Image (cartoon, rainbow, N blue to C red; front, side):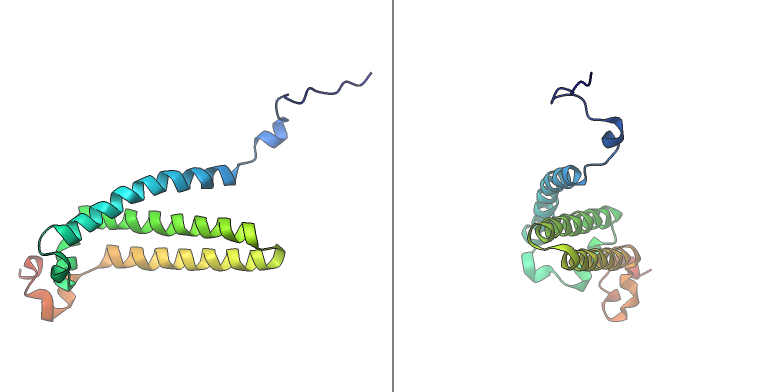
Length: 145
């Protein structure tokens, strides 16, 4: 006699090993969104409300800010979280509104652009040297030595 399993029986072991990427993408959107709110408001507060506001933001301001490793890490987190958050949202839209080969092309372009922007942004933040610009170096305390 053949028995039929109850509908609420556990999932078969071979299906349990698959990673639910949609669930992790959804969770990432929520967690990164909360972190981005904190990072963005911290960024806006330090750049716009402390000191002289927008008028003070120039090359020397950014160079002085990036002389502190704390701000490099802050901006790296902001860059990575925001770019991946946006790419994950675009991935969802592409999956919802495109089909087959066009979907594959758009997802491939999305990955290439996202990885490229992450690499360029990370390279700028980690290798930035304000002392290379001799016209502004006199305004930056770290370059006077």
